[in-house]
Structures are given as C-alpha cells and as structure tokens.
Length: 519
Image 1: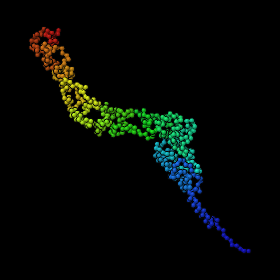
Image 2 (image 1 turned 60 degrees about the vertical axis):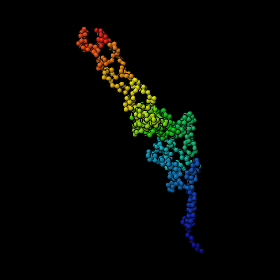
Image 3 (image 1 turned 90 degrees about the vertical axis):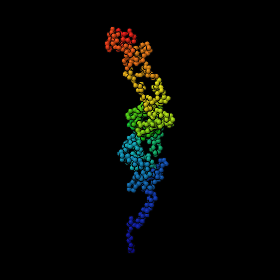
Image 4 (image 1 turned 45 degrees about the vertical axis):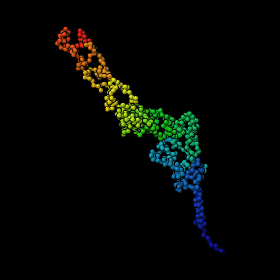
C-alpha cells in the first residue's frame, strides 16, 4: 500500500493569504475614508435646508460638508461649540456677551423678558442656559430635508427673548397665535415691525396711526409683551426723569424722536441749546440757575434773578449790538466772575457806533455812564425839565454846579442841598423854600401869612428888616416909635399889662392904629 505525505494545515487568520487580504482591505478602506471624509460612518444625511442666501465661510448648508466630519466632530470628544462657532460667528458673539453678563450680574437665564439683568442688547444665544451644547437643540443626520432651526424651537421657552408671550397667547379674535403670525419669514425669527402694526391696526386703526406717527415703527423699542407701558403714568416716568413744570406739558415725541426711547439723554443741553447770550460763560449745568417751571427767571444765589429788575441796568435796549448780533453776557461782563463789570466797556462799544459823539459826550459828562443811563433809553432826547425844571436863575447854571465830579444819578433836588438856610429864619419855616421863594430870585419872598399891615406908616411896603432886625421870630416897633420905656409906660398907665407884654405891641395894636387896643 502506497503511503502519502501528510501536509500541515495553515492558520486561518495569520496565514499569508489572510494577512495580505487584510492589508489590502485596510488600505482600500483607508483610501475610501480619506476621499469620502468619513461618509461611510455617517448615521445619516446632513440637512440641506437653506434659509435665505446667506453663506457662512462659503458654505450654504450642512449637506455641503457632509463628507468632512472634522468640521463638527472632535475625535473621541464629539461635537464642540468652538467648531460650530467657527462658522456661526454671530452666535459666538452672543454667547460671549451672555457669559460676560453672567460674570457681572449672575445667571440671567430665568429672568423675565421685562426685567433683563443688563439692559445691554444680548442676542438669544447669550440668554440660553448651556448654549454651548449646540447638539441639544440642533439635531443632525436626520435627512437632507430636516430643518435645524424650526425643529429647535419646538419646545422653546419664549421668555428667554426680550419679548414675552404673556399678552400674546391669542389674537384679538381669541384664536391661538402661532409663531408665523409674528415671524413671517420662514426659517428666520426676526420680527417685521409690520407684523405688529398690521395686527394692532385691525383692532384700532385710528389709534395705531397716531401711535406710529408719535413713536415710529420699532415697537420693540418700548414694548416687551408685558403691557408695562399700558398704564405708564408720570409717577413711573419720574423714576427715570421727572416731568415737572413746563416738562409736564411736553409731548413724548418732543424728547423721544423717531420713536427712540432707550438711551434718551437727560441733560438740558440735549434739548435746549445753550443760549448765545451766555454761551461759554456758565457751563452746561443749567439746573444751577434754571428750573423746569420756566427759563425765566433764573435763580442766582438761591433767589430769582431778572437783569431788568434786580440790577440798575435794564437790557431792554441791549438785546442786539450795533451790527445786529445778539448781545451775550460776556459782551459787557468781561471779568473772571459773571458779575464783574467795567464801565469802560460802554465807551468801547459805543465808540464803534459813533466815535465823534462819544468823544464829546464823555468830555462833557464823564465815563460814569450808569450815573445817567439805565438801559431803557430814558436819556434819549433827554429833557431836563421832565426830571427837574431849569427855569429862572437855574437856566444859566453850568451842569457842574449841581452835578459835581460829573455824577448825575442821585443828585438831590432839595433847595438846601445847594442853598444854605439863611440865619434870619433858621429853624422857623422849615426847608420847603419854594413855599415862599421862587427860582426868579431869592427876594422878594412870598409871605404865606402876615396880619400886620406891610404899608404901616402909609409910606409904601416896608422892608422886613425895619421891624425884624435879627430874626423873623422877633420884631420891634421902637425903631420908628417912642423908645423911651419910661415915657411909653407913662402913656400907657391906664392900661394894665405886665413887663413881659410891654414890647408886644401887636398884641394890642394888631392893625397898627394908635387908638386901637384889645380890651
């Protein structure tokens, strides 16, 4: 019997054939993965849905990067926000703003839309908690027709936005409001202002017309869905800016132009231009001198100030300069302090108007302009007779006789200021000289009362000094009549009178007649 040689059987895995086959297969698989970007391992197609024509990094939708897993996946880690944000840069900015807010004020995710932790504008992804877990909301590999945006908002909490749906669950017909009622562009969640206006106009067209004219079309500038402005009262506004005085009657649009409310400045100069009259003189802290009750009067040192009333110079004739330009405070007040004033400013200004006149005027009246002028123009075509008549002996007087040192204001008008009271009637008649004297001459005086005949002796009117030798309070008859006391007493023995009455002749002879006497 022929005997055959027994052959040894090879290992099924480590045989040369198996190893070569495995190597070829691995190389082929590697080449396939290299050229297909890992598509062989994809659990499904990526979304090809595209909203609008916006492209990010040259890519219109995820389906275009379906073979490049590394665009989204990190080996052995998974999907990272940083890879998504490499394309979605706007979301990266929102998320960084949200993180910055959280670091300052704490988490804001559960704060209501009407009370944001920080009024600074932060996008939606800055308010969503755990916004870095992109795959939690935006699922992929669900097919090319899967809409990443629409599916992400299926269970979205709208209070995370700056507009709550608390007052927008139903429309005016009590029908539930769906997302498309406000977000009318498919795949985009911006709100067209026309959506608000169209809906509310159907309810009250007249109101909406007035409202839009006053506040503009950007409804979200004021409204947050809570109707917080529906009962907005002056007391509420006072928490931001008190509407008192003249501001109480101001219309909202006077300050909030073009419907802008956030960031409205509260400084006076934002609405009230600094008056040219005091431009650059007092600064822009208007409330230091002015109140909301009215621009005038201003308050200075705690008291109302009116230049026409509170100074000796009115601005009635000084509103504009000779060249027509408005006067400013600094036109006259050129010193370091607002109240500083040098009257040389008057001369310097008026010389520009008429140098010849001013040269003659200052030579005659001096440089103390306010001694005569009060700003009302009262010295224009000046008539001295309206102030104090210049008649009689006063007509020929030089101005300097009364106005010493060219000082005019406050010049006294009493006679005794220039004419000393004569000793002969000092203290007898007072200082109302005009009661007896005239400007024509000091003598003769007009007697107000004199019972004794002035033509006594029938030789015409006697001079006062004939009887009144020392003072008008005393008189004597002995200058003309018997002046021997003994002889006079002897003649009057039958009359009983005392020594005191001996020389009081007029008591018994009031008309000067010899036989006349009082019984």
